[in-house]
Length: 166
Image 1 (tube, rainbow, N blue to C red):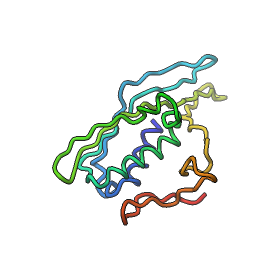
Image 2: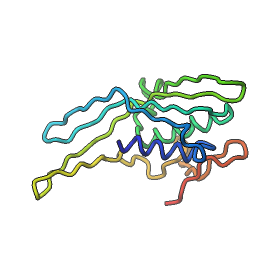
Image 3: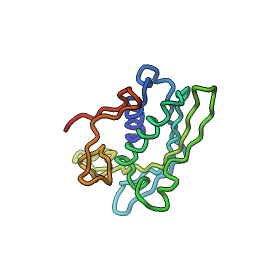
Image 4: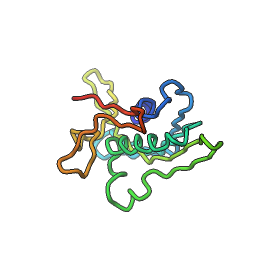
């Protein structure tokens, strides 16, 4: 699952303190379906990715949500578009553990296109496709004229995400 690996990597880099304590993050692949495509063995995987973050400081929740929104804008953009589905793009639950920390859980409805390409020797290559690059300035603050390239995101005085220049 290319998207799950990418999501884990993105959140580990974007959420303060998670890189130093990565065992607080779990991403489970649930309720999957394989949808065949006509004309060959290429298929689409549709699944729910359950993201669980344990012991999240309450003042870091904004960083978690912003990281998820940016990731979804690139990896599953139809969830973030202005449509009926976008109203429920990231259903989540919080369990407050004490006055300073909580456990965070959300369910993301994801798809991944998988191409199965025949090889000259009779075998097959399996290629998990990236989403089409709809915005070459990703991550960018969408809706601003002109679009603004996000280079750094701060949560209070802490640098949370830094995008590399192309």
